Image (cartoon, rainbow, N blue to C red; front, side, top):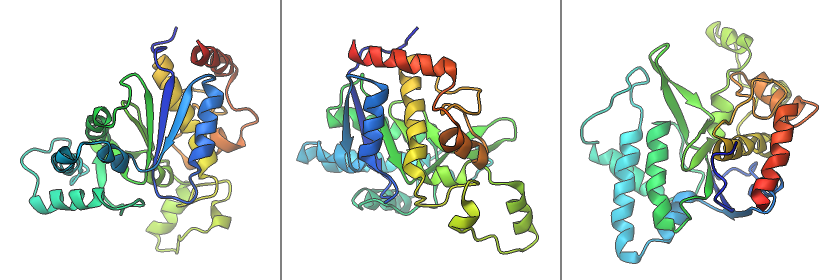
Length: 275
């Protein structure tokens, strides 16, 4: 039934720089879902990995990462292919951002799979077990190219090695109520407040962020162990929400954490962690 039972280790990195992210609470939730699995908390992913490099290698690894991040940038949301050498000022910018403590400036959209590939190259440098589950929480925005409408769409999570969750994506990727977009088109002031957003959508540094992230951590765990991170039932934390109201209901508003099928599966996961 389970695709990956080998590792007893999970790493959770906080590269978001958000005061609304409680990394210890997320680690505790991981321990609860995977009983017996060692869950380790770390601060910034890039800083941690570069810090594990031998001094002679740091500059080279940092430069290679900067090249990959520059190449992962989406400059045209309607174009999937990006070729050629990246402009040196862009590469230099990415190199400088590595030395900056989170939160880092947002405003750039990265290709999710290329971002995952760039981060994957750092894992072996950090001495993290190749079979470990790694979750990186970042403030950077990433997306995937969809063939249906031939354009990039922002995403909250990308599954891979590592799995990456975007706190900016939590706010920007799931759509808000249609009335918000209609109001903007008509020129009305649509600047949201916490009162407006209560029960309807998330805001930057929203106090509900950590609780919502627990659901995405659960999705990463199910992806890692079973190969299937999502559920079709709206009241399950594994529901793949496309609207803000769906996200808040599945993560905060439902009477139960998981549907019956995934509740039983979660119970089995604890046995996997203890095996």
